[in-house]
Length: 169
Image (cartoon, rainbow, N blue to C red; front, side, top):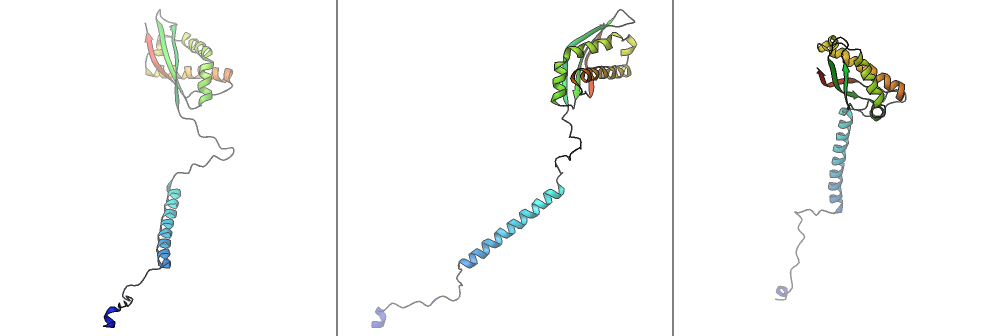
């Protein structure tokens, strides 16, 4: 009976292998390596297919500023040369010249108003009769405004003139 009181020792279970710290490190290392490889592949794909936005080389022209619209808040009124009628215009301009051109348009507004009125003072009814004539008028106004910017501001230009209101009475 002495044997019954003595607890029996268990034999180690040989069917289940023990995992040590080395096995765990190997699994974590494999996971990290796979994630790094996947990340590197994604980075390579992004650089291969994404548009390049590197800075322009020295001497290369800078990218143009975004298109901006500036309304010239003045009603321009002038008599037509060949009739007793008068013409009233409101205009706006667009520019990709950026802040310097927008500031120059505001600073030299009085000179711009004078230049626009000078162009209008030479107009007859035929100069605004149809869309082709109005397109020609917009070109003349653009040249006049660009002339003011060149003379008064030392440069800069507008891209286009828009007739926002045109009344003949």
